[in-house]
Length: 85
Length: 472
Ligand SMILES: Cc1cc2nc3c(=O)[nH]c(=O)nc-3n(C[C@H](O)[C@H](O)[C@H](O)COP(=O)(O)OP(=O)(O)OC[C@H]3O[C@@H](n4cnc5c(N)ncnc54)[C@H](O)[C@@H]3O)c2cc1C
Ligand code: FES
Image 1 (cartoon, rainbow over the protein chains, first blue to last red):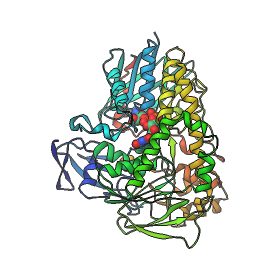
Image 2: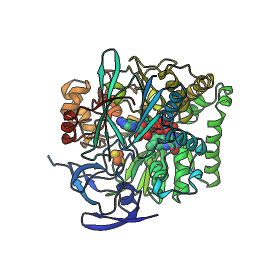
Image 3: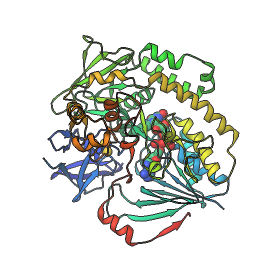
Image 4: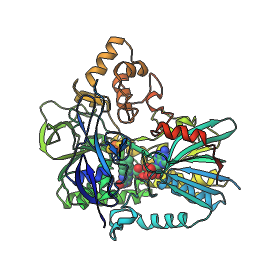
C-alpha cells in the first residue's frame, strides 16, 4: 500500500493511494467539508456520486465530487461554500 | 455483424456484454468507474489489491471469470472512466451516445460519440432515503455509502453505527461494517411483522427457487445473532441529534402504515447512522432516449428486455429493483437479443424466479405513507437548496398548486446540484399524498437531459470535434 499526501485548505493530510478524496477525509476523522447556501455543513451522504453533497475544489477546479475522485499525491483540495443569498 | 453498445459495467452490463459477444456481435462497454463490477462487486482498486478480497463478496469467482473474459476479448472494448452524459434521439436508429472519458468531474476529458446498432442501458440505481429531522447532519449517510466506502476503500463511516430503513439490503451493509471493525448499534427495519409476513410468507415454494438469495440472507441473519446485534422491526429513526455531527438518534415504534406511535421514542447513541428505504432506478439516459417508464419509475421492458424505443434495451436495477441475480439474468437476455440472438432458457427461467422474488421484496419492505408524520416543518427536504418541508407545504398552499414545476420554481426544491435525485420522489409524494411518483406532473423530477454535470469548456470542445464513431 502506497502512502500519499494531499493538502486540504493548506494542511497536509496522509492517506493511501486508491482512496477517494472523501474516503481520505473520512479516514482522517472529518465528516463535513462543504457549507450550503444557508451555512449547513455537508460531507458524504450517498457515496456513489448521486447527491452532490461532497463537492470540493481540486487543484483549482470547483465542484468535484469527492466520493468519485481518487486522491492523487500532491492534490490541493479546497473546501467549498455555496453562494449565500 | 451487429454492434452492441452497453452503458454500465455492473452485473447487468457485464452479463449483457458477454451474451452479445457469444452471439457474435462486437461490443463496446462504457463504465464511469475505474473498474467494472458495479455496486455489487465493488472492490479495492488494482494498486491496492487485498488477498482477502473474496471474503467481502458473494460470487467473487464468478465476477473474476466474467471480467477476465471481457478484458481478454479483442471483440469487446471495455472503456472505464467513461462518463456518458447524454444520448441523442434519432428517427429510425438507436440514439447517439455522448461520453467524456477521463476523471470524474474533470476537465479536458476526451469526448467520444458512439453510433450503435443496438444500445443496452444498464445504469443501475441509487438509494432512496426518506427525510427526517436532522437527516442532513454530517454522520448521517445512506446505507449504500457505508457499503461503498467499506467495500471500495476499507473506510468505516463511524465507530458506533446504527443501520436503519427498510429492506434486506440493510443486512449486507451490517456485514460490511462488521468486517471493517465498526460496532453496529442495531438494525431498525420500518416494516412491521404484518407487512413482513405479507411479503415473505405466502407461496413459500417460490422462495425455494430463489434459494441462493434466501441462503445469502439467512447467512446475514445468523451473523446478526452471533454478534448480538438488536434487529428491530416496525420502527424507524424519526430524528437525528447533534450540532455539527450526529451524536444520537430517536427511534420510535411505527403503526402498520409507518406513522410513528407517540410516546414510544427512545434515544440511541451513535456517531454514524446509515439509512436506506429502497432504491430508485437511474433512468436519466433511458428517459433521454425516450423509453417509457412505469408508475414506479422503472423502465418498461417486454420479456426480451426491449424498451418502447426500437434498438434500445435495458437490464438490471433500472428496470426494477430485484438484486444481483435478476440483474445478471436480465443482462444475459438483453445482450442476446441486442445481438439478434435468442436468450438462453436458463436466463429466462431465472428472470421469472427473481421477478417474483422482487415482488415479495416490494410487498415486504415497500414504503408506506405514514412516514410523512415524522417530517416536521423544519426538516430539510431538498439538501442542495436547504428547502424545508414547511416551505414546500406553505408554497403549495399559497399557490394553490400541487404541480411540481411551479413548486420547484417557487421553492427551488429539486433545482440544486443533484437535480432532484435525492429529494425528487419525496417532494412528489409529499405533495401528491401518494407514494407513486408523478401523479400530477408525470416524471418531472426524473427528467434530466444531461445525465452528469459537464463543464462548459468540455461541451464547447466536444461540439468542435466531430468524432462520431460506429461501434466499434
Ligand atoms: C451504493 C449501493 C451499494 C450496493 N451494495 C450492494 C451489496 O453490497 N449487496 C447487494 O446485494 N446489493 C447491493 N446493492 C444493490 C445493487 O445495486 C444490485 O444488486 C446490483 O449491483 C445491480 O446491478 P446493476 O448492474 O443493475 O447495477 P449497478 O451494479 O449499479 O451497475 C451500474 C453501473 O453503471 C454505471 N453507470 C451508471 N450511469 C452511468 C453513466 N452515465 N455513464 C457510465 N456508467 C454509468 C455505474 O458506474 C455502475 O457501475 C447496492 C446498491 C447501491 C446503490
Ligand atoms: S456523497 Fe453523494 S455525490 Fe459524493
